[in-house]
Image (cartoon, rainbow, N blue to C red):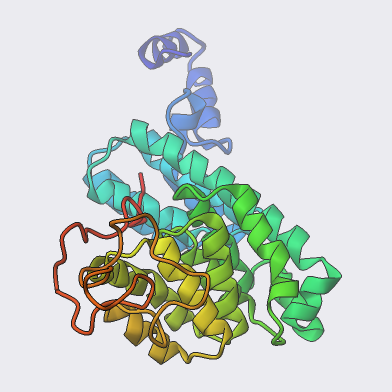
Length: 339
């Protein structure tokens, strides 16, 4: 690395005027002075690069401003912006990653800790983009999406494609296995009969996978049934909280509730009825469908059993208590995360 004081002193020893010419050439020859002497990357150059690639420059500027307010150096600021630029150059969504960056800055997470998390999120977004591209190219998927819409929805820089890529990246960030996501997507052409299904609806379904607390197989069954029934993205988003409420109020295992809900949806139970039943702590349509039990002994809702006149498997009591013993909700499935 060139030491600036010594370098300038050496320039002074040259023929009059020559040192000044060399210094001006270094400063004005294309690279900023900081870059010429091995100092941090120029933030404005990163912003310009992001703008050229189609990134959300306003959000990038907000990140830069907040990072400077937090006392970060120009080099650290640039390093926080560079993953978003790399995504934009591949026609991948940048807003989720920049939102994660702002979240980390708001929590005062050191840049040294944020950078590896952001790089991981970038890698998962790149992987998600590849998954969506491969999936959308399948003939069966094009029929699912609608042949006339599939090509445009799968194209880069479209909102629906971006939302699905972001949903997959976020699900991976929350611990959903890549094989689970790819298996769910691969099963949609056979599991969903209605046509066409917007890619934005598929994205809403993927967003539900990390949050409902059920096993991967049961979560796939439930969300596929809801997509096939034409549930709106808003109804899909409410399913996880409805299941948690049912778990807390009935003390039934979440897999049992999810299986019963999937079967009720398949039989035609409307979304409003399903969600209302779950929020009230009961199975949609009454008791659990055939083959869906209460789980291990002792896990049934209060008021059931051999001495109550309500054998196990006939549904929760008429007036389930607000806070039954042990009804603490599904463990560790609240989602979230960030740097």
